[in-house]
Structure formats: structure tokens, C-alpha cells
Length: 150
Image (cartoon, rainbow, N blue to C red; front, side, top):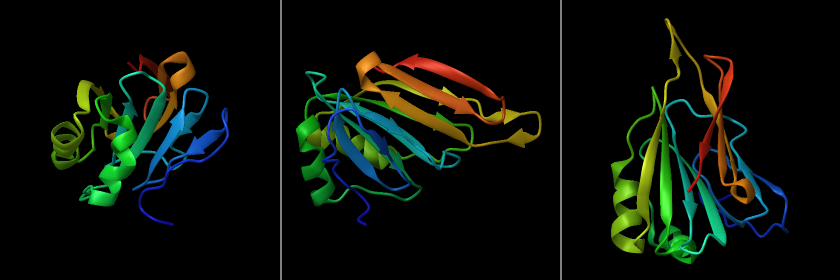
């Protein structure tokens, strides 16, 4: 399995996005992170026409290659939402490459508080393009947060 994959799943399927992977789909797909985020960062992406969508589960030190940029070319000119938790390590190189090489601009950043007292827990992301929603489940707070995607 390569670090980045393109989804060829039929419409309406759930796409699991594992650490280090990128998946591309359409409005009817549901993207989710079954292993959760702790120090990783999530990127929710769309093309300018909100027809194609992507989800990147970026791991620390991850960089985009030319092949990765070709995969993301179908989203050129679109937007991304960066999702970071309290323990997430910044990924400025990926954000810069999305903006400089593909003109995919950051809409707004979503910062998730994942620390409750002395406890810090992972969070899980589900991106549902059909309802323009991002659901975030925080284990530390035992709650679910909902955000508009774009």
C-alpha cells in the first residue's frame, strides 16, 4: 500500500483514511479516520466546484512528492480545511505546497482542544461532503463537535 491512494470506490461508500494516506472521492462518499489523530493533522479538501473531495491524514514529517501532487491535481483551485488537535505537530510544508503548487487555499483552521485536565486523548474525524459536515469525536471530552466543511 502506497502512502497515498486514490479512491475508485462507487458512490456512497465509506472511505477509511489511515495515517499517511490521502483518499479522493465524490459528494456521496464518507471519509473517516478509524485510527484517530493525536500528533497527526487532518486535511479536508474540495475542488472549486465541490464535485470532488479529498481527505489527508498527515503524519509528522510527511511531505508531498510530485506523484502526490499529480494525484491532488483534480482538486486544483479548490480549498482545504486544516484540522489540528492540542498535540498535533504543525505541517506547514504540506499547506504551503497545496497553496503554491495547486492553488488549493486554506479556508479556515479548526483547532481541537484534546486535553481535559491532565488527560489528552485522540480525536476522530468524519467528513461528509453530501451534508457539508465535519464531525469530530473527542475521546478526552467524550463528545462530538460538528463543523461546516466549506
